[in-house]
Length: 259
Length: 334
Image 1 (cartoon, chains in turn cyan, yellow):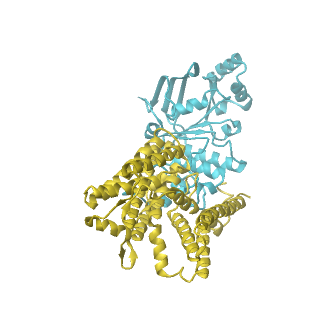
Image 2: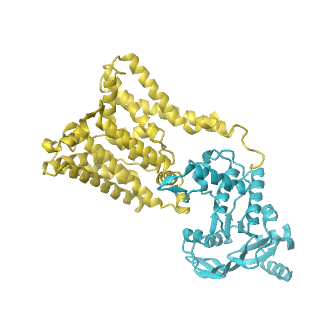
Image 3: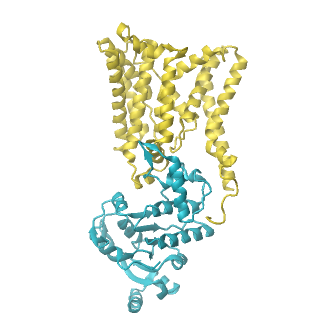
């Protein structure tokens, strides 16, 4: 699926200050439906802060967020969810002692008069997983009994199953075994194919080539470059992330911008 | 993982079943063993009268243990239940003595329990003071209030109009003790709410991962407060049952009660870390404690032995539990 013509979410001049430390120094970023944007940068470059601003966990100190062209103020994670922005956190927001179906519907349980409709949640949960081609043999297994990859898949499926416009993934593959990484990356591609704007925050550069269409590079609170996947290579990506030589990075950026 | 490495076993294997229900299974085995042992040692143990008597005596503990199961499932603890029982027990007798009709006194006492729970829950969830501290303070304050109100005397409930309340504590219906019937009803409601309702699911979710629960929009603070209201109300009901059974209200009622309640819940496999709790386990845990107490008396051992054996059994059961549970989970990973 090709990306949407208009950006689904558009950030301009986003600033975030913690005390005397300006963590985001005016970020502009457009997210398109059906496209995966890789957000990369060294530690403390501001990529996690930026994703938290987008998910409503932080309120920016300056700048504008537009959703479908309209300016919005996102005052918290609950409000972000109402705008259909979902985030999957690195540290897995699952409840270990609740079963797979229960976790998929956590906070949005199907109920009648306060009584859970467990059979319906089992069926619909199964459909949610099937739609994303996720294989979990037992919907009633406690999440604690599953592998890291299965758990990550469930977390992503939960976020992806409620028709999000924007799906933010923070390091979804960093703690997984090789085969599990493959499955999660395939899952990201399927979510993207549904027209969702996916943002992938990651340290694993090899993942970028598997799922991303575009990469935004963060360095010390600035977005220093943006590349389409087909216009770049691993060497350039590493250089832009390390950003040791800002002149060189800027030069590369000007070259890249021409294409 | 998704396409290739699915678990080869059938979807609900015996092994999974064992791991998931290890705690409830082990307390069941323990309970059955205790019953077997005492039925061999004493011819009276299995007589219906004796068993019903155990159930009748256990009723206040069973009722309070329902509330406690909810609190411990959220990862909290309530040490004040014994003091709430004493306070409500004393207030009930005082209210009747002051001429209040018994239905009004009953409602008043239940509301009092709820308010006490609400106050403690507010300190725990909105002021972020550890439940252990808040309810330890409650344990001291509430029994102190009960002592102050009664001046340490036992208040008799001898008003003829209060007869129905006495019946709740000591009456029989169709050959079955009324307090036991009440306890069974409360247990059934508790089990249903914890397993089958949205509220019960939220209680489990807050205990399993409070941060995850908050992120998906579950009102964690309100849930955390509400479970203390539950222990408050169930303790008040226990206070009424004791008032009815003894025909008096006393600030010295239910000393050490909180420890028995917590022991029953924990024996039943509810994790002190939160996230796992079953009412069925709690029932079995409470009955095990009750049967041990009853059985040791029937076989004419020293009554002081009861405490020692109960403590030892708790330690042994939990120890076995973690060993078995730990081994099974390790087997799963390897």
